[in-house]
Length: 387
Image (cartoon, helix red, strand yellow):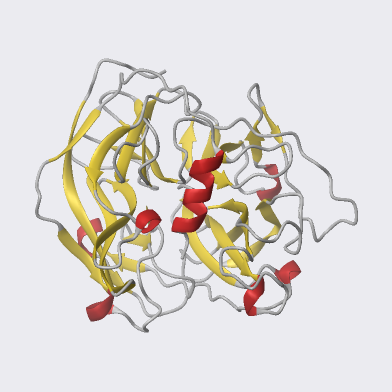
């Protein structure tokens, strides 16, 4: 599971209260309370593993059709002529080897966060999970205590029909190998979609931190997305921090800490630019935590520069997988997509985008079939304007 309620709760407890700015950007509200089913794992899956398990991201292929990522670690895409007409393609575009050697980065690979300029050549980020308990490499023996995450870079040259590892492969890793610090969730995880602003591309990723690095959300930037080694994290002044592959060197360098981007606390699902106001909007799911998150559910914040964000605003209250009830309904993995997007990578929205999310019922502390759904939103332009 790309997000984990235990990891999120740990992260929430470790972070200090955020100081977020005033709400000045667009405001979001639901235009309808009747969701549309995009994909139902009980009805549409090619295999039982084909369940929604990451925020939906998408790009327009060279023929104008839509390619969407939203499923599990046996990576298949949803394809169709429009956002509203995508169906699962049973061809596997990237499999997960479930291999025991952590240096191979081929345990559980969740493919998403695509970027393309032409609809043929695709760059993407992978949320990689290494589970030492599955491979006899973790004496703790627990799911969360053995979990080690890394963000990886992959490419496609055939419009997203297949993906291969980039060189360098590692985009974001903690300066520790998987056997260090066991007993808690460790690493970089859940990269957001990639967005473009001026000459640069950006994404956000969460980290559970290490000695000298606080828990939270880091912002990454590059001017050359085709070079996977060019991504740098924001240090509070500039984008200077590079993360190395801890298995490619004998000496583990200690990078300077990234600047934690507030007020997210939990991993960001997606980032889009609202065209009428020129403001960025981020959406994410959160558990109930102190004064910032008074209810569990979906939240959003706005920004003019991707570095400084407004206070979090509740979009929808509800149980998420961070606080999953044993019997009830769960919502998770929010993202914003708009059929009217002017960008090939769906990084912009108008005043009536769709909120995509996963929902599932729980029974006896287990989940039932998962559904990828979408609901129409209405956005007002707000007072603030970005650059």
